[in-house]
Length: 228
Image (cartoon, rainbow, N blue to C red):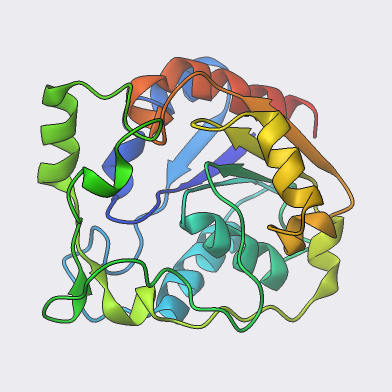
């Protein structure tokens, strides 16, 4: 199956370097998507441009792909599903939940010189980063790409309710499937509460399983693709 991989904030396409060969071994055709402003050297990219890049990747697939989105980019994956509900076979959300129409995309941390740099590990202490050793923390931080301000402060737009018909699998790294179900039931993820088919898959990792558990993450994505 064709699998499109979208990294979260500060990540470029190399974040999936250990996952793609594992998916290929399982018979899939993975393709990391390099987002404007997160890996192409641009600092003035917009959220609309990132969405356009993901849609171009979806449109370029021969068959309906499994669209995989990580962290804040779960909203970007949801926006792409909204824009192409008939072209996405399934959406896998890793460690995140989509925002609603009209909300700000990812304005979480301080902006400097028109971008949101990686804030250091302080905000992610605990379950998010417990499985990262010092060497891996340094490697991730060294490769972190500041997120353009117009991306982080972009406004989410959703227009097609057929997005709720696309199957979703929520991959739960630093939280459990039971917690995810409870949050959705409590109204903390309204978009997923309206989705018609939602599965949950736990993975024993922190917030960045593509670095710490790439083989297991590939196995979970293989399972999601196989159930399509």
